[in-house]
Length: 122
Image 1 (cartoon, one colour):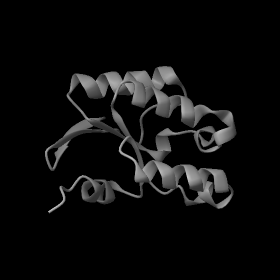
Image 2 (tube, rainbow, N blue to C red):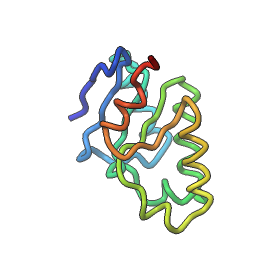
Image 3 (spheres, rainbow, N blue to C red):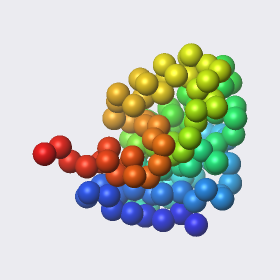
Image 4 (cartoon, rainbow, N blue to C red):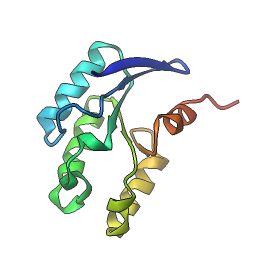
């Protein structure tokens, strides 16, 4: 079950790991809608909910899903260990690095790292 959580004043929809896969723009739109309905600024999706093709940039799945989140101005956080995907793809490593520098898409190892990212600067 997906839950809403306020993290340092930022509303986040935390998606359950055992939910359906997010493998299309339609699936992304459904999560964006659920998040928006609850006022979420970010939707945190566990890696378990993303098919391997999401991490193969040549499939364009990641780009399509990320673009949908950007279009609706809702942040996307991919939560979990993606090291096995990073090992085989310098393009994915570059993509993740660039995303993590921005304000729209983040890749974090766990929810503690997300909480840290959302901690206001002192």
